[in-house]
Length: 524
Image 1: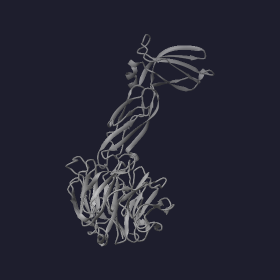
Image 2: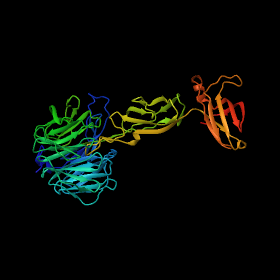
Image 3: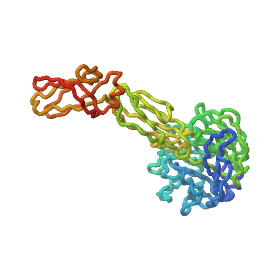
Image 4: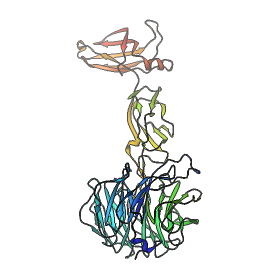
C-alpha cells in the first residue's frame, strides 16, 4: 500500500493530465506566461493552462487510464504522461496539445517518470513490476530490458549531469542507484527512513533529498559518498518535494496536514511556519524563475500558488478531478548574435553590437561581456565599445541571461528541466589588435645582405611634422615585410581610418642609404 495520498481509493480512478501553472498577475504583472501540465486522476485527459491569464485553454486532451505522473522534454516540445492503469506512457505534442503516436507500453503500475537533461531518454518507474523502463525519446520506444530495483519503487530523479538515476523504493526503505551509461544498478541500495515517497536533487548535483512518508522526515544523501545526513523533521506524511532552481530551498508537502514546509538547504533545517495550501497536496514544482511554487491539491481538485519570497498563497485554481502531478514547460536559453570586427587599433574603441540577439520564449535581461584583456562589461547592454591598450590577439565573449535566469547551463533537479541551457547563449570570437602596418619590399639586387628600413609617418614632404614613432625593419632580398606604425596620440584617430599614409623612408641596401617620401598603402 502506498502512503501519502489524500484518498487511497483514488489510486484506482482514472487520471487526467491537465496543463496547469499559475503566475499571479496581481503580484507580478511582468511575469512571463508559461504553460504547465497537471495530471487529474479521474478525467484521463490533459488540460492546458495559460499562466498569464490563469485560465484553461481549449478542450482537454485525452490520454490513457489513470495518468499518474508527467515530465517534459528540455526543449519544451513534448510532455510524457505515465498512465498507471493502462501501463503505458502517452506523448503529447506541446504545440498542438494532441497525443502523437501510439502509447508506449511499460511495466505494471507505472508511477513516476524523469527525462534526462539531454532530452534523449525517459526513465519510467514501474511500481508493481519493481523495475525501471528506459524509453528512447527519438524512437519513442522502450529499449533494453527493464532494470530491477527495490520493492515498490515510487519515484525517480536523474542527476544534473545525466550520469546517474536515483529510485526511491517505497517498500524497501532505500534508494537504488542506476548508472545511466550502462542502465544497471550499481552498488548497494542507500538506506533511508520509512516509505521514501519522492526524490529531488540540488542543481549542482551534490545532494539528493528524499521524503520519507512513514517517518515525517526528509533524508539528505551525499551524491559522492552516499552518506546520509541526520533526517530533517517535517510534517506528518511528507509526500512531494521540489528544490528551487537556485538550490537554496526545498519545498515539501504534507499530505495529511495540507501544508508545505520550506527547508533551507544550506542549514538543512525547516525555516518559518508551514504554509497552508489545499487538501491533500501531492505534487509541487518551482517556476523556472524561482519566484513561485505550484502545489497540486489532490483532495481539493485545485492548484495553489505560493509566492516564494513572501509565502503568500493565492486563491486556489480549480483543475480536474484528483490532480496528482505537475510539470512546467522549461525556460529556453537566449541566443547570442554579435556583430564585431576582427581587428582593431590599440587605444581606439572597438565596437560590439549584440542587438540581433534573441530569446525564444521571453526577453533578455543581462548582457555580460569579457574582452580578453582582463576588462569586463557586466550587464553592459547589447551595444558596447572597448579600447585595447596594447597589440595582441584577444578573445572576447558575450554571455546572455534571460529574464527567468536561463543562460548557458541547464538547471535540473531530477525530472523536468527548469532551464534548458544552451551554448548558444554565449558567443566568443578573437580580435587582432595591431598598429597600422605598411608593406615594404626588398629588391632582389639587395643580395646577399638584404635591406634595412627606417620610416615614420609625416604630415607632408620635406619639413613635415612626424606623426608616428620611428619604425625599423629588415628584409631579405626579394622578400617583403610589414612595418607597424605607432602613431602619436594626436594622429591616432586619423591613422585608424586611413587607407594610405605618407611616410619618410630611409632604406639601406648593400651599404648604400637613401631617404625618400612616399605614400604607402596600409595593409593591416
